[in-house]
Length: 149
Image (cartoon, rainbow, N blue to C red; front, top):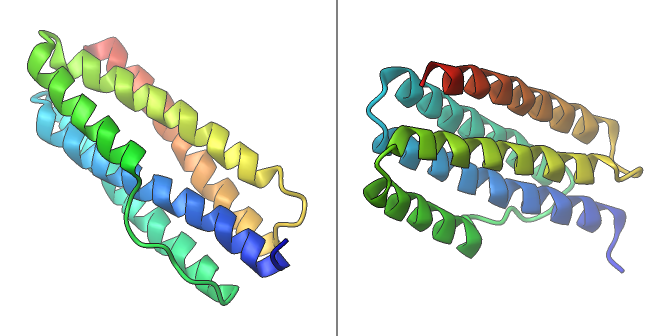
């Protein structure tokens, strides 16, 4: 079993990897839609995830842990699937919205899982709660965009 700091660092690095994946996915979605509102939404979410990544990296470094760089194979495969779907789907924008909603729901579950760790330091809990709340707000926004489509 690793030390307390290693365990926290590992959990944060897993979230960081998924944050990189989400950032790239939102950039890809912004490239694959024509609807200006959706394009802006996806671009803003990509920037948000970029900011999340910097916050997570700083928190990882605070605990003297190494920061893992890059995204996951799963994330790369998901973005490839988004590309294929955008080519094959007649309703590309609805397809991208569905993927974004699915991804945001998954992110909330991942944050909940890490936040359930009772040994997280208060600074980590605060960062993760703030990020999770922004994701939840974004999920509400994307559902409103879905109604416009």
